[in-house]
Length: 168
Image (cartoon, rainbow, N blue to C red):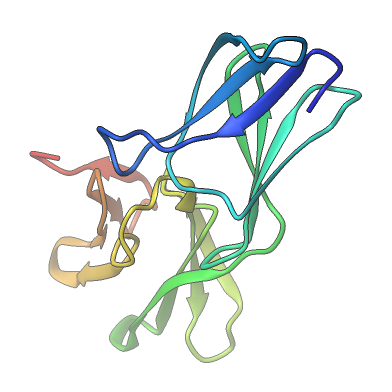
């Protein structure tokens, strides 16, 4: 609710994974232009009356906010806490791989837990539709760590670069 607008989060009847934001005039409740859709239904939606930004809160299974600027249609995830999406131990290499909800893959020493490396995979939980997205699978012979989801991602475990997976 702002001085001139009311924002409502809706559900798209044609797409069960889309939650459009709607804007209405406060004066007569007439629809106003707004082209934003959320991928998941938020637990709460609030507005900063000073900046006009909307904030969509997600508490479970992750902890993050979306900063939504209706003036620019820009949506920025803000992580309030990191949660581990998946972990995978590669005992032969003494490595523990941890993927957190902000898309960062951390490589830890499996004995000391010291961080050895990290990579931004492009994965984030705001795009997650299914619980199995973000699961890790290792092909040690090819030096590839795969992240399930849409699209499927592969990380070269030697260079820590995210590489495209053919066909995804």
